[in-house]
Image (cartoon, rainbow, N blue to C red):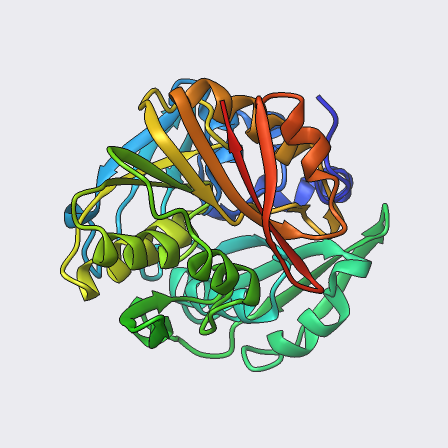
Length: 360
């Protein structure tokens, strides 16, 4: 139960939380809030792994993409005095005196969270941001200037805590203003993709996914899982090409699942969507998994996610099932795949990416 560096910095400033009505957005671990058990606190999670670890009773969530409209979705669980909500965003207005944001990787994602927090607190409310120094907390303070004069409260553990008092009201967060819909075309198939800041490859078809779509397996049948689906790019393209397949989409990010549902709706498609930490808690068996998986945790390269995913993927597949993935060439995937799958071969390669086909 080791606290993240960000939480260790907040622990030094525990008296900060004794007054006011607090909301936390995207805490970097599930344990810091244990020190605030007696306070009524709302926690907004855009990432399912920390949400599941915090509430400990929801291993995964299954959603029908048609049930997710532009107003989003939320899964809420009370734990003592704390209310945990897994959601892409919240549109509550003036409900809090203070919002604590944990700094995300992407600057545009941070701008979205700042705007959401500004709606949550209203005039004279405070937005606090905690983040790692090498994660961009200095440039974060510049972005906060549009809301007031940011002040550095403390720094320790290679992290900083910055606070801004809102100089005016900003109204509720409007998700529509942050959604971009782009038309992509691959091999005579064109389709719309909805994305938001904080979702992988926002507003562009990344080169790895493009290669995967160009070289995808054409012999799939039955159930197919688009793992780490992002904005639903892969699933929506393949569903248009192969209407006989049944698709499932999974991701850890609520923003990604929200965008996937919008992408499917844009193309008059629908599918079952799973919110999960990797494949943990997902019981659906499939014949095929197709993926452009993440290999980053925070700002570091992390293979443990992929290693765990490969062994979990094997359990999720029916006999003779296949896994097709795209990855940076420098990553040690052929060896990792060979540990779990009987056949592994490299289907295509560019100077940057490899497509691997693995079968049981």
